[in-house]
Image 1 (cartoon, helix red, strand yellow):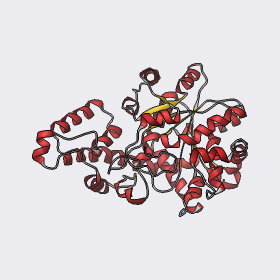
Image 2: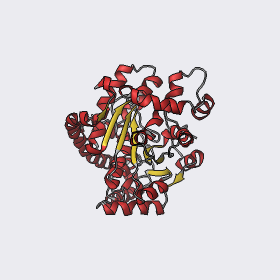
Image 3: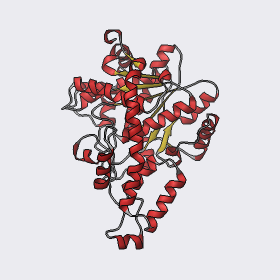
Image 4: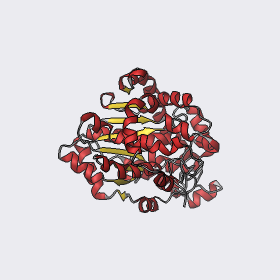
Length: 380
Protein backbone atom coordinates (compact mmCIF):
# COMPACT_ATOMS: atom_id res chain seq x y z
CA UNK A 1 0.00 0.00 0.00
CA UNK A 2 1.16 3.55 -0.74
CA UNK A 3 2.52 5.17 2.42
CA UNK A 4 0.36 8.06 3.64
CA UNK A 5 1.64 10.41 6.33
CA UNK A 6 2.16 14.19 6.65
CA UNK A 7 5.59 14.12 4.99
CA UNK A 8 5.50 11.19 2.56
CA UNK A 9 6.04 11.75 -1.15
CA UNK A 10 2.80 9.99 -2.05
CA UNK A 11 2.98 8.26 -5.43
CA UNK A 12 0.77 5.59 -6.93
CA UNK A 13 -2.84 4.70 -6.30
CA UNK A 14 -4.19 5.40 -2.81
CA UNK A 15 -6.73 2.96 -1.33
CA UNK A 16 -8.98 5.39 0.54
CA UNK A 17 -11.31 2.67 1.84
CA UNK A 18 -8.30 0.98 3.42
CA UNK A 19 -7.21 4.28 4.97
CA UNK A 20 -10.63 4.60 6.62
CA UNK A 21 -10.12 1.18 8.15
CA UNK A 22 -6.46 1.67 9.08
CA UNK A 23 -6.91 5.18 10.52
CA UNK A 24 -10.19 4.34 12.25
CA UNK A 25 -12.21 7.11 10.62
CA UNK A 26 -15.82 6.95 9.45
CA UNK A 27 -17.03 7.05 5.86
CA UNK A 28 -19.31 9.96 4.96
CA UNK A 29 -22.68 8.34 4.33
CA UNK A 30 -25.87 9.55 2.68
CA UNK A 31 -27.50 10.39 6.00
CA UNK A 32 -24.67 12.74 6.95
CA UNK A 33 -24.70 14.32 3.48
CA UNK A 34 -28.44 14.92 3.80
CA UNK A 35 -27.92 16.73 7.10
CA UNK A 36 -25.21 18.90 5.56
CA UNK A 37 -27.44 19.57 2.55
CA UNK A 38 -30.29 20.73 4.79
CA UNK A 39 -28.01 23.27 6.48
CA UNK A 40 -26.76 24.43 3.08
CA UNK A 41 -30.33 24.93 1.83
CA UNK A 42 -31.03 27.26 4.76
CA UNK A 43 -28.31 29.54 3.35
CA UNK A 44 -29.51 29.21 -0.23
CA UNK A 45 -26.65 26.88 -1.14
CA UNK A 46 -26.45 23.34 -2.48
CA UNK A 47 -24.45 20.36 -1.30
CA UNK A 48 -20.84 20.88 -2.32
CA UNK A 49 -19.78 18.77 -5.29
CA UNK A 50 -16.75 17.60 -3.28
CA UNK A 51 -19.24 15.75 -1.06
CA UNK A 52 -21.44 14.53 -3.90
CA UNK A 53 -18.42 13.02 -5.66
CA UNK A 54 -16.68 11.54 -2.63
CA UNK A 55 -13.71 13.91 -2.76
CA UNK A 56 -14.43 14.61 0.90
CA UNK A 57 -14.98 11.02 1.93
CA UNK A 58 -14.22 10.47 5.61
CA UNK A 59 -14.74 12.13 8.98
CA UNK A 60 -14.37 12.02 12.72
CA UNK A 61 -17.29 13.20 14.88
CA UNK A 62 -19.10 15.21 12.18
CA UNK A 63 -22.41 13.98 13.56
CA UNK A 64 -21.48 15.33 16.99
CA UNK A 65 -20.46 18.68 15.47
CA UNK A 66 -23.86 18.97 13.79
CA UNK A 67 -25.66 17.91 16.97
CA UNK A 68 -23.87 20.66 18.90
CA UNK A 69 -24.52 23.24 16.19
CA UNK A 70 -28.21 22.36 16.11
CA UNK A 71 -28.34 22.85 19.89
CA UNK A 72 -26.92 26.36 19.43
CA UNK A 73 -23.30 25.53 20.32
CA UNK A 74 -21.45 26.94 17.30
CA UNK A 75 -18.17 25.35 16.25
CA UNK A 76 -15.20 27.05 14.60
CA UNK A 77 -13.09 25.89 11.66
CA UNK A 78 -9.37 25.27 11.83
CA UNK A 79 -7.02 24.33 9.03
CA UNK A 80 -3.55 25.31 7.90
CA UNK A 81 -0.71 25.38 5.44
CA UNK A 82 2.92 24.35 5.67
CA UNK A 83 4.66 27.06 3.62
CA UNK A 84 7.41 25.42 1.56
CA UNK A 85 6.73 26.93 -1.85
CA UNK A 86 4.04 28.41 -4.07
CA UNK A 87 0.44 27.30 -3.60
CA UNK A 88 -0.94 24.87 -6.18
CA UNK A 89 -4.42 23.68 -7.08
CA UNK A 90 -4.15 20.71 -4.74
CA UNK A 91 -3.82 23.07 -1.78
CA UNK A 92 -6.98 24.91 -2.84
CA UNK A 93 -9.17 21.80 -2.61
CA UNK A 94 -9.57 21.67 1.20
CA UNK A 95 -9.62 25.50 1.38
CA UNK A 96 -12.47 25.75 -1.14
CA UNK A 97 -14.46 23.28 0.92
CA UNK A 98 -13.60 25.13 4.13
CA UNK A 99 -15.00 28.30 2.59
CA UNK A 100 -18.23 26.45 1.81
CA UNK A 101 -18.42 25.34 5.44
CA UNK A 102 -17.85 28.92 6.60
CA UNK A 103 -20.61 30.15 4.28
CA UNK A 104 -23.07 27.45 5.33
CA UNK A 105 -22.54 27.63 9.08
CA UNK A 106 -21.45 31.29 9.45
CA UNK A 107 -18.48 30.40 11.67
CA UNK A 108 -14.96 31.62 12.32
CA UNK A 109 -11.89 30.17 10.61
CA UNK A 110 -8.55 29.97 12.43
CA UNK A 111 -5.81 29.38 9.89
CA UNK A 112 -2.34 28.26 11.01
CA UNK A 113 0.78 28.92 8.91
CA UNK A 114 3.36 26.39 10.08
CA UNK A 115 6.66 27.98 9.10
CA UNK A 116 8.28 26.16 12.04
CA UNK A 117 7.18 22.76 10.72
CA UNK A 118 8.60 23.29 7.26
CA UNK A 119 11.88 24.57 8.67
CA UNK A 120 12.18 21.51 10.93
CA UNK A 121 11.32 18.94 8.27
CA UNK A 122 13.00 20.39 5.16
CA UNK A 123 16.79 20.38 5.31
CA UNK A 124 17.19 22.91 2.50
CA UNK A 125 14.66 25.49 3.77
CA UNK A 126 15.76 28.36 6.01
CA UNK A 127 13.48 29.68 8.73
CA UNK A 128 13.56 33.12 7.10
CA UNK A 129 12.36 31.71 3.79
CA UNK A 130 9.64 29.61 5.44
CA UNK A 131 8.44 32.72 7.27
CA UNK A 132 8.42 34.78 4.05
CA UNK A 133 6.48 32.07 2.24
CA UNK A 134 3.95 31.95 5.07
CA UNK A 135 2.92 35.54 4.39
CA UNK A 136 2.88 35.01 0.62
CA UNK A 137 0.74 31.88 1.02
CA UNK A 138 -1.59 33.76 3.37
CA UNK A 139 -2.58 35.93 0.40
CA UNK A 140 -3.64 32.77 -1.42
CA UNK A 141 -5.73 31.73 1.56
CA UNK A 142 -7.61 35.02 1.52
CA UNK A 143 -7.98 34.81 -2.26
CA UNK A 144 -10.23 31.77 -1.77
CA UNK A 145 -12.84 34.22 -0.49
CA UNK A 146 -13.08 33.68 3.27
CA UNK A 147 -15.02 36.28 5.24
CA UNK A 148 -12.29 38.59 6.64
CA UNK A 149 -14.52 39.48 9.61
CA UNK A 150 -14.62 35.81 10.60
CA UNK A 151 -11.09 34.75 9.63
CA UNK A 152 -7.91 34.78 11.70
CA UNK A 153 -4.51 33.88 10.24
CA UNK A 154 -1.35 33.38 12.28
CA UNK A 155 2.22 32.36 11.54
CA UNK A 156 3.63 30.06 14.21
CA UNK A 157 6.97 31.79 14.83
CA UNK A 158 5.28 35.21 15.00
CA UNK A 159 2.55 34.01 17.35
CA UNK A 160 4.71 31.70 19.44
CA UNK A 161 4.33 33.61 22.72
CA UNK A 162 0.62 32.80 22.57
CA UNK A 163 0.95 29.28 21.18
CA UNK A 164 3.90 27.94 23.18
CA UNK A 165 2.36 27.87 26.70
CA UNK A 166 -0.48 25.73 25.34
CA UNK A 167 1.87 23.61 23.23
CA UNK A 168 3.89 22.56 26.27
CA UNK A 169 0.70 21.57 28.09
CA UNK A 170 0.10 19.14 25.24
CA UNK A 171 3.77 18.15 24.88
CA UNK A 172 3.93 17.10 28.54
CA UNK A 173 1.37 14.40 27.76
CA UNK A 174 2.97 13.26 24.51
CA UNK A 175 5.87 10.81 24.73
CA UNK A 176 8.48 9.79 22.19
CA UNK A 177 7.13 6.25 22.04
CA UNK A 178 3.85 7.55 20.63
CA UNK A 179 5.44 9.84 18.03
CA UNK A 180 7.83 7.08 17.02
CA UNK A 181 4.97 4.62 16.54
CA UNK A 182 2.74 7.06 14.66
CA UNK A 183 5.31 8.84 12.49
CA UNK A 184 8.18 6.37 12.32
CA UNK A 185 10.67 8.76 13.94
CA UNK A 186 14.14 7.43 14.71
CA UNK A 187 17.14 8.37 16.81
CA UNK A 188 18.21 10.63 13.93
CA UNK A 189 15.01 12.70 14.02
CA UNK A 190 15.56 16.23 15.31
CA UNK A 191 13.81 17.02 18.59
CA UNK A 192 11.93 19.92 17.02
CA UNK A 193 10.20 17.52 14.64
CA UNK A 194 9.28 15.25 17.54
CA UNK A 195 7.76 18.23 19.39
CA UNK A 196 5.97 19.70 16.39
CA UNK A 197 2.59 17.90 16.76
CA UNK A 198 2.16 19.81 20.01
CA UNK A 199 2.18 23.09 18.06
CA UNK A 200 -0.25 21.82 15.44
CA UNK A 201 -2.63 20.78 18.23
CA UNK A 202 -2.87 24.23 19.82
CA UNK A 203 -5.48 25.75 17.44
CA UNK A 204 -7.80 22.89 18.45
CA UNK A 205 -8.14 24.58 21.85
CA UNK A 206 -6.93 28.17 21.45
CA UNK A 207 -10.38 29.76 20.87
CA UNK A 208 -11.70 27.79 23.85
CA UNK A 209 -8.85 29.06 26.03
CA UNK A 210 -9.42 32.66 24.94
CA UNK A 211 -13.21 32.41 25.41
CA UNK A 212 -12.83 30.53 28.72
CA UNK A 213 -15.38 27.95 27.58
CA UNK A 214 -15.28 24.81 25.46
CA UNK A 215 -15.99 25.50 21.78
CA UNK A 216 -16.24 22.61 19.28
CA UNK A 217 -13.57 22.57 16.58
CA UNK A 218 -13.92 21.16 13.05
CA UNK A 219 -10.80 20.61 10.95
CA UNK A 220 -11.07 20.04 7.16
CA UNK A 221 -7.84 18.56 5.81
CA UNK A 222 -6.30 16.08 3.40
CA UNK A 223 -6.15 12.59 4.90
CA UNK A 224 -2.33 12.57 5.16
CA UNK A 225 -2.54 15.01 8.11
CA UNK A 226 -4.70 12.67 10.17
CA UNK A 227 -1.80 11.25 12.18
CA UNK A 228 -1.30 14.56 14.00
CA UNK A 229 -4.92 14.75 15.06
CA UNK A 230 -5.21 11.14 16.16
CA UNK A 231 -2.64 12.09 18.78
CA UNK A 232 -4.39 15.38 19.52
CA UNK A 233 -7.73 13.66 20.08
CA UNK A 234 -6.16 11.33 22.64
CA UNK A 235 -4.58 14.15 24.63
CA UNK A 236 -7.07 17.03 24.70
CA UNK A 237 -9.76 15.33 26.84
CA UNK A 238 -7.06 14.86 29.51
CA UNK A 239 -6.73 18.65 29.54
CA UNK A 240 -10.47 19.13 29.79
CA UNK A 241 -11.18 20.05 26.15
CA UNK A 242 -13.32 18.57 23.39
CA UNK A 243 -11.75 16.29 20.84
CA UNK A 244 -11.53 18.13 17.51
CA UNK A 245 -13.82 16.82 14.79
CA UNK A 246 -12.42 16.32 11.32
CA UNK A 247 -13.49 15.91 7.71
CA UNK A 248 -11.00 14.47 5.22
CA UNK A 249 -10.42 14.87 1.50
CA UNK A 250 -8.65 12.86 -1.16
CA UNK A 251 -5.52 14.20 -2.82
CA UNK A 252 -5.62 16.02 -6.12
CA UNK A 253 -3.23 13.82 -8.13
CA UNK A 254 -0.46 15.25 -10.32
CA UNK A 255 -1.24 15.49 -14.01
CA UNK A 256 1.02 12.50 -14.64
CA UNK A 257 -1.11 10.08 -12.65
CA UNK A 258 -2.13 8.81 -9.21
CA UNK A 259 -0.65 10.11 -5.96
CA UNK A 260 -0.37 13.56 -4.40
CA UNK A 261 0.65 16.71 -6.20
CA UNK A 262 3.96 18.20 -5.07
CA UNK A 263 5.60 21.63 -5.13
CA UNK A 264 9.08 20.17 -5.54
CA UNK A 265 11.00 17.40 -7.28
CA UNK A 266 10.29 15.76 -10.61
CA UNK A 267 6.51 16.17 -10.28
CA UNK A 268 6.79 19.97 -10.13
CA UNK A 269 6.43 20.21 -13.93
CA UNK A 270 3.07 18.41 -13.73
CA UNK A 271 1.77 20.68 -10.98
CA UNK A 272 -0.48 23.66 -11.71
CA UNK A 273 0.43 26.57 -9.45
CA UNK A 274 -1.93 29.45 -8.76
CA UNK A 275 0.81 31.76 -10.08
CA UNK A 276 0.82 30.07 -13.52
CA UNK A 277 -0.47 32.03 -16.51
CA UNK A 278 -2.87 30.63 -19.12
CA UNK A 279 -0.08 29.75 -21.56
CA UNK A 280 1.85 27.81 -18.91
CA UNK A 281 -1.28 25.98 -17.75
CA UNK A 282 -2.14 24.89 -21.29
CA UNK A 283 1.42 23.75 -21.94
CA UNK A 284 1.50 21.66 -18.73
CA UNK A 285 -1.90 20.07 -19.30
CA UNK A 286 -1.25 19.24 -22.95
CA UNK A 287 2.19 17.80 -22.25
CA UNK A 288 1.80 16.09 -18.89
CA UNK A 289 -1.83 15.07 -18.34
CA UNK A 290 -1.93 11.27 -18.56
CA UNK A 291 -4.44 10.24 -21.20
CA UNK A 292 -7.00 7.48 -21.02
CA UNK A 293 -7.40 7.69 -24.77
CA UNK A 294 -6.38 5.11 -27.35
CA UNK A 295 -3.14 5.19 -29.37
CA UNK A 296 -4.76 6.33 -32.62
CA UNK A 297 -7.75 8.50 -33.48
CA UNK A 298 -9.28 5.55 -35.32
CA UNK A 299 -9.00 3.28 -32.28
CA UNK A 300 -10.29 6.00 -29.99
CA UNK A 301 -13.33 6.69 -32.16
CA UNK A 302 -14.11 2.97 -32.13
CA UNK A 303 -13.44 2.07 -28.48
CA UNK A 304 -13.55 5.38 -26.57
CA UNK A 305 -11.40 6.59 -23.70
CA UNK A 306 -11.05 5.44 -20.10
CA UNK A 307 -12.12 8.22 -17.72
CA UNK A 308 -10.98 6.18 -14.69
CA UNK A 309 -7.33 6.78 -15.55
CA UNK A 310 -7.53 9.93 -17.67
CA UNK A 311 -6.11 12.76 -15.56
CA UNK A 312 -7.85 15.56 -17.45
CA UNK A 313 -11.18 13.98 -16.61
CA UNK A 314 -10.14 13.18 -13.04
CA UNK A 315 -9.23 16.83 -12.54
CA UNK A 316 -12.59 17.91 -13.94
CA UNK A 317 -14.28 15.93 -11.15
CA UNK A 318 -12.63 18.43 -8.78
CA UNK A 319 -13.06 21.66 -10.72
CA UNK A 320 -16.22 21.31 -12.82
CA UNK A 321 -19.09 21.70 -10.34
CA UNK A 322 -21.92 21.02 -12.82
CA UNK A 323 -22.86 17.32 -12.55
CA UNK A 324 -24.77 17.26 -15.83
CA UNK A 325 -21.91 18.86 -17.74
CA UNK A 326 -19.43 16.41 -16.23
CA UNK A 327 -21.66 13.44 -17.06
CA UNK A 328 -21.97 14.67 -20.65
CA UNK A 329 -18.18 14.99 -21.00
CA UNK A 330 -17.79 11.48 -19.61
CA UNK A 331 -20.26 10.03 -22.13
CA UNK A 332 -18.64 11.86 -25.02
CA UNK A 333 -15.14 10.70 -24.10
CA UNK A 334 -16.07 7.10 -23.38
CA UNK A 335 -18.01 6.87 -26.64
CA UNK A 336 -15.03 8.12 -28.63
CA UNK A 337 -16.73 11.30 -29.83
CA UNK A 338 -14.41 13.44 -27.70
CA UNK A 339 -10.67 13.07 -28.31
CA UNK A 340 -7.98 13.21 -25.64
CA UNK A 341 -6.65 16.57 -26.80
CA UNK A 342 -10.16 18.01 -26.79
CA UNK A 343 -10.73 16.76 -23.24
CA UNK A 344 -7.47 18.37 -22.16
CA UNK A 345 -8.61 21.66 -23.69
CA UNK A 346 -11.86 21.45 -21.70
CA UNK A 347 -9.77 21.13 -18.54
CA UNK A 348 -7.65 24.14 -19.55
CA UNK A 349 -10.80 26.17 -20.22
CA UNK A 350 -12.12 25.15 -16.79
CA UNK A 351 -9.12 25.90 -14.60
CA UNK A 352 -7.74 29.02 -16.31
CA UNK A 353 -10.72 31.18 -15.20
CA UNK A 354 -10.43 29.77 -11.66
CA UNK A 355 -6.76 30.77 -11.48
CA UNK A 356 -7.33 34.13 -13.19
CA UNK A 357 -9.96 35.01 -10.59
CA UNK A 358 -7.73 33.74 -7.80
CA UNK A 359 -4.87 35.96 -8.94
CA UNK A 360 -7.12 39.04 -8.97
CA UNK A 361 -8.39 38.34 -5.46
CA UNK A 362 -4.85 37.62 -4.31
CA UNK A 363 -3.73 41.13 -5.18
CA UNK A 364 -6.76 42.61 -3.41
CA UNK A 365 -5.91 40.47 -0.36
CA UNK A 366 -2.74 42.50 0.31
CA UNK A 367 -4.90 45.23 1.84
CA UNK A 368 -6.96 42.74 3.85
CA UNK A 369 -4.15 40.61 5.29
CA UNK A 370 -3.12 43.03 8.08
CA UNK A 371 -6.73 43.04 9.34
CA UNK A 372 -6.88 39.26 9.82
CA UNK A 373 -3.34 38.59 11.07
CA UNK A 374 -2.77 37.59 14.68
CA UNK A 375 0.67 38.46 16.04
CA UNK A 376 2.28 38.71 19.44
CA UNK A 377 3.10 42.25 20.51
CA UNK A 378 6.79 41.98 19.72
CA UNK A 379 5.84 41.34 16.05
CA UNK A 380 3.16 44.02 15.75
